Amino acid sequence: MLESLYKYAAPQNFYQLSRRLTPWLAGAAALLLLAGLAGALWFAPPDYQQGESFRIIYVHVPSAWMSLFVYVVLAAAGITGLVWKVKVADALARASAPIGAAFTFLALATGSLWGKPMWGAWWVWDARLTSELILLFLYVGYIALQGAIEDRRMAARAGAVLAVIGLINIPIIHYSVEWWSTLHQGPTVTRFDAPAIHISMLIPLLIMALGFKLYYAANVLVRMRCELLEAERNSAWVRQLGS
Amino acid sequence: MSVASAFMAVLRRDLLLGLRHRVEIINPLVFYILIASLFPFAVGSDRSTLGIIGPAVIWVCALLAATLSLDRIFHADFEDGSLEQLFLARQPLVLLTSAKVLAHWLLCGLPLIPAALALNALYQLPVTSLWPMLTTLLLGTPVFSLTGAALAALTVGLRGGGVLLALLILPLYIPVLIFAVGAVGNAMNGLSIAGELYFLAALLVLALTLMPLAAAAALRIRLG
Amino acid sequence: MNSLGEFLHMGGYGLYVWGAYGLSAAILIWNAIVPTQREKSLLRELAARSNGRSGP
Image: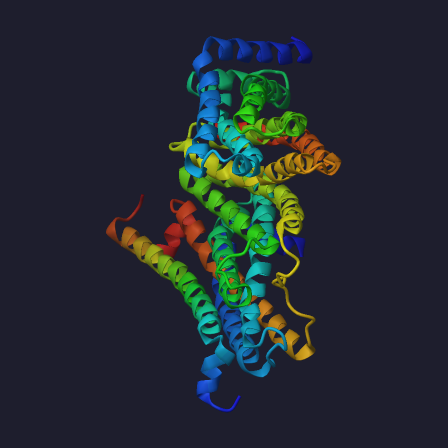
């Protein structure tokens, strides 16, 4: 186990492994997403309070879960790269940022699309949406920092420190926003939450969530390969790929 | 040189340099008062409106002024190479960085408090908001300097570093803003502010323990 | 649900539900295409580099 971990921490071995894994992960993700889509749009019964609009939850909740999950992966990969100087971990952190930002944006946009008919407004300063917005700022900051530092090694290390600071701050921000919104929000506003959920509603949600996770895995592998090709462009194994 | 005297030496040097370049200290302060006095022109000078937005405006502007002054913690020292010397010193970098942060807070954070009291009068806020405004600023501005120092160290010497720094730091200031303005609002409504003050104190302790380490790590990375 | 029309209508929430799913599909697909194309062009560049000149 540990031995294979060492083996695939080497960029060239990882590159080959990831080429073999990607089609399987992408295929499984596509199947799960299609199955989840059928369940979400067709088989799940409409919610008795929210009607058909509740179906938005099937894309909103997995995106919101992933937005946080990807940030944790990013920070963990950053630390791994910083402490053990693993190039593959640096690539993982850097490749995760745009996907995480996309998931965060998606969670915000679908939340807004759900809010319009439910709250009567495109945006309500709901605790969860607000935290999601701040998370998007954190992602944008990370990406901006990566863009500003030209030396890749230094960018990865600086990004790791930033991600750790962000990770410590996420729960603080989340709870302070929650505190703030309970002070300012009228009690009539329905919370944007999965309703007391029936099993026929839950299964599509879990399938979608798993589909999103595999989608991220497949996508991050492709992005990591690009990162490694660019970072290692002058090393022997990358030259061999060309010939 | 002992660790304590090295700390004092860095502190003294930064304070002297700051007092010599007084404009750099005064400008964020003028910016603070200027921005805060723009709002009455935009929303009108009606006393009840000013009473509602006052604490929020005073705090948001303090946050912006603090952000504006962050650049000076490391920038000049990076340019003239004295940051490199700090890095090569035998004393732990965390401690020397802490001295710089303390100097920054004394020069740029502390003056915001009397300015905020002046703004309190400008916004015709009741006397009951004076004390919480003072305490929250006293607890909040060091958090700004500490967190800001870590991110200023990350972005030191980068092209367009100023805007980038603001982009990175402002989301992290949100909890301080929430609890501070919450406390002032509570006090104006005659409610207890102990909860908010405890939260601010907890944030300060957390920043005090973690951020000097982060700043030192960031400097090590940026100086290679 | 009996008809396609009803399915598309989504109990009056059609615009929002289909908007959310359409946007999600667009972002997920675009997000998958961009790095795939980038890898291809990187590999092409590599091949061109090693064909253009042998050795460093």
